Length: 212
Image (cartoon, rainbow, N blue to C red; front, side):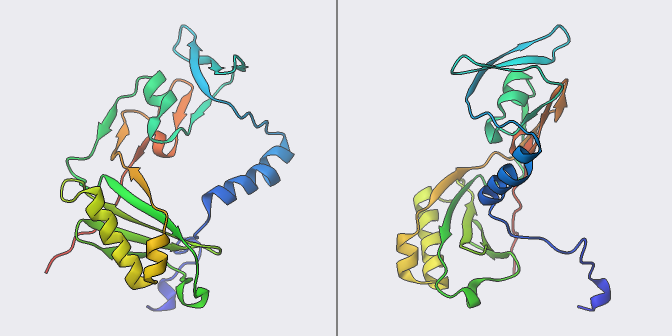
């Protein structure tokens, strides 16, 4: 399309390995600037008379210090926002049927061919497949609806697709993991001194509609 319609600041996205990038940010940005990293498992809390969380207790008996703001990034579990602050989950599954996914990470056999600069989407019988090339590997997955096929059928269809796009050997050796998708959101994202971000607040999986 004509270059005058392209704005680099708004029309560009990047494929990042979220785990590696998060680790890099922690080691190179956060900790050197005074952020304290505590690795623990939380299990209970205390609130004040206004409903703000004042303390969080950990499994080993330690207590996280009082803070002005707690950020809930516990994923679909939404431990703080939904579990502790009582923000009811409002599902969208009436409108979005895709509720499961099979995902895997593929090695490069021909980086020049397979390292694309875009996210590729393929419409499938019961959902769609994403394909995101990173520098060191390819992230791909099949988002599907359990209303119309079983996990076994979806996995078989996904492996057949990988075999066609790459090779039967790569498809056979691909280690797949299952994702259960919760479409919807919590009633509120910010309650007292707790804010839910990402999956802790909500998630909407796009769908592909095909027709003749």
